Length: 591
Image 1 (cartoon, rainbow, N blue to C red):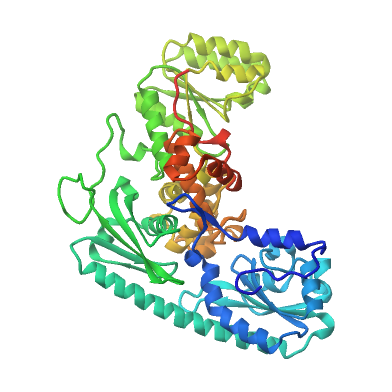
Image 2 (image 1 turned 180 degrees about the vertical axis):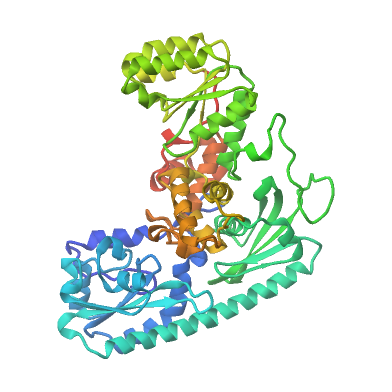
């Protein structure tokens, strides 16, 4: 690969050509520019780009020295994805293409078995895999020598440098060649990091000398905060602000907007790029009170509680637009005294929301929770328990109502219709079915949808302390380090909050009471990017599109206008980013 383009065998009929090219193209991110045009994201925020800056010149020199030779040089990121390949004769290049050893393909050991890239990452030391030592048969004709590349300041593994050749061309001098190249790359990384930190320090001091304001300067490894920022920011806010800056500065040098911090604090923030045009050093975030604040102090005040809100310990955590929308929907539900249906994917916290609605209505009334799944074992006994619960005072929450025994559908419909007050709250995956049980859901006058965690990634920073407090018996409760929190924020969480809770419980057990760092997370969750593929920037783009859809209540034309793109572009973005219009966070609507 030269200058970002993939070098594939010249034969257009090559059987793997389309797969290789399409895989490499999937690595390039496309964003929505303010003008509405589709433009490549500027990749300064991506860790692979930082790695390429340091490794590129070294690989150029090695490739020039070995041009046409029997050796190929590979560079992979910290997720074992190949991001560059150099040198190697035509025959070797064709063999590597056929084996899918090309930019865009992943070689994590947990998925592809023993190999020079994945094993070096897993062992965190130089690793040689030759011939039949490879797990995959199509790699057994090669010898691979990989060595991890460590960031000289943070100590984190940034990637792997690998030299690959055919087994017959193996040479004992290749290992010292790889180690020497790794030392040179790490030296360049140190020089680059030192220069970047100096630039960050200069911008931090310059911003701090201006009018009294909270100033935070940060990149992937360094955080600088003045006194005002230290007093304003919660432990979780650093990771959130970094992700916010990545999202908002995807195609511009400066952005001004409101940001919701922890403890429901809202500030007007200005994020500014730091660094040369082609070499991002980090960002400076200046935070001030909103213009409608009652005074001009540098520390923002917590937002006043909404009318009818309960104690903060009972509030629903989250600073995302989707979380805000859910709180608004709950407020709308409380204005009407009718049964409520809480919809959402498994693990999103539907039961918590149902209990929250009950507490907001009347926290002094008793609450009974029945699981409709149990009705399938003994329908008559379950129906009797439902009737007894409704005859008593208080609220009844019916979980998994869409799993109700079909023979009870008509009787439960009659019960829901006969309840005089909002004493029944049910949870289900969603409406839309055509069977008898699905028709029961239509008898609920109001419904609200709990959004999946993948649509509210920034809420991980607010949810994690609550979950840690619940699953830890130690005091003080262990906290997530900024690095570990950034990692968790970057994942897609197909299991939603339940999955996050399980990961945190494991991390608490491994940390033995200390703060939770990346090494305490389960191995499959230690990657800083989305486990299903998209990077931070692609997640950020999805969040922007999702936020527009949520704010416009799913109106595609209005969302497209909000983003400054054509409606056809919005539909294409939704397909590319995997946004299902049938599972958007829905507003509360009276039926």
